[in-house]
Image 1 (cartoon, rainbow, N blue to C red):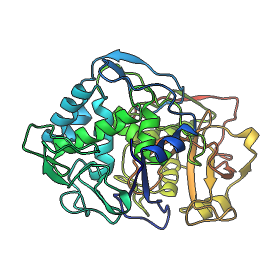
Image 2: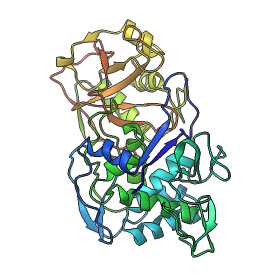
Image 3: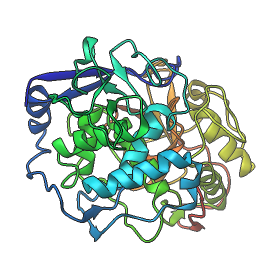
Image 4: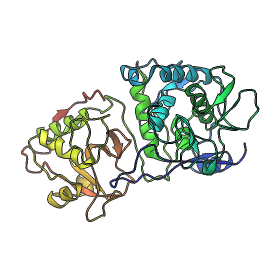
Amino acid sequence: MTNRLLVRSETQQNTTREQRAPRILVFGIIGLVGVVGLGLLAVPILIGTNAFFAVSAGCSGQQTGTAGQPAPSAKAKSIPANYLYWYKRVGQHYSVPWTILAGIGTVESDNGRTTLPGVHSGSNAFGAAGPMQIGIGGAAGNVWGGLPVHSASQAVNGVATSEDGGPNADVYNPADAIAGAAKYLLEFQVQANPSAAIFAYNHLQSYVQSVLYYAGLYAGGNYSVVSANMPASSSVAGCATAAGGVPAIQAPTQAVATAIAFAEQQIGKPYLWGGTGPDAFDCSGLVMMAYRAAAVNIARTSQAQWASEQRVPASQVQPGDLVFFAGADGTVRAPGHVGLVIGNGKMIEAYATGFPIRVASYTNRGTVGFTRPWANTGGSSNTSASASSSASG
């Protein structure tokens, strides 16, 4: 492979709450050095096999092989019909889980429905183009290979292809772009380690989580949830969740059970700065409304929540506690981000623009501390209430 670097921008606008770093896609020697250095790409590419690694988020580091491709779930009906067709067809053609392709397409361009620069013509500021945001030049380098639209018979050093049999390889054509993304993922061994391949596509663990979330959302049947190993160097470690993927939780009080159940029901809804529901939330709005559902009133902002609630040592954290981070617009004394602890190092959070409300790990993310808004709600930590998962995503 040649030495090619693809730098890509976010498809969503930044907010003051969470500033997103530019999307960086490393292709070739530079990418291999960076990712191999993380110990993620140790298994040879398995081109042409029928193994399907069920995708969504998990933390096991294990992989579950099943034959074929998953049937689409009811949630997959939200994907435009032509995109759904090509995700499934390309996935079968290249032995790449179609739901991973759909997850990338959803995050990058809302399956071709966004009007952001470069998706339907030209390129974005970094030189990425098409519904799968593949580099065609500029700072991105020409990962596509050749012109954005060129004769399918032209030999190029890139991922360009004419998947629909047309005369051109067209980065703006959904069929060709999806196939190009599949070829790229195969370069980074998606069949052996899905998370590593997605991380190579965009060097953000939050991006990996979001893609895997949508992948799980779109998969029907009994496919298990697998994330494989996440890159250790990132500060945003952990897991996201598929719809209905929150395990049963032993809540210390009924108020906590109610708050967690409310938060579970919001999983999959969009982040909106200043949002307090019912259709979208920001981080502090989500936890405020969760506790309001339990008849517990807490402050509106993460800064005020941190200042007004009882602090809890990390060694004594329980489900229902709040976990705080400095975030992009806060400090350790006035945290700008908050999540709702559900146990085992996980929380439900409204993370940032472009990311659905999700389950994620709060470990290795620069935690500021914890508070207990339910401290005076009655009951004790010895009395458990079931907060079972009934979220539909």
